[in-house]
Length: 124
Image (cartoon, rainbow, N blue to C red; front, top):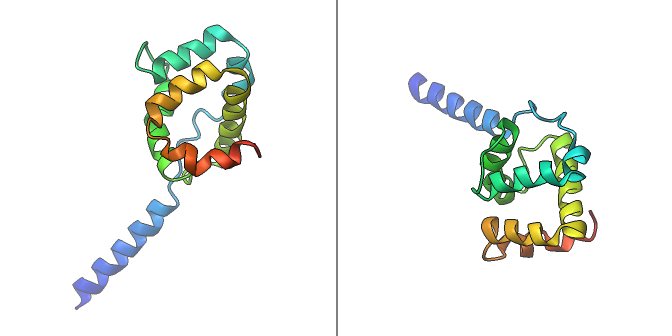
């Protein structure tokens, strides 16, 4: 009985620990404005995300987390990451429709996330 109780406590503890899990904050200080306003830098990130070029460490981390963030509504994002995501989405949607459409075709080909999050684009 004690073994079963101990196992249940461990499972509950692990479940709570996982629900509070966040993405790494290692790259939270990346200057998003510098990237968004520099076509050379932005295109490097896009090539990485599209599997058309090499990835910097932060782009590789971003690429690895995009599917999970889309699926879970950025639930593992820190506040800084959530605000950065809004900034990038707003910039791409308003100023880089060609890139926006490429990324959408790769990461949301069936428009599942556009349907889910699209109404919020106007509020970003």
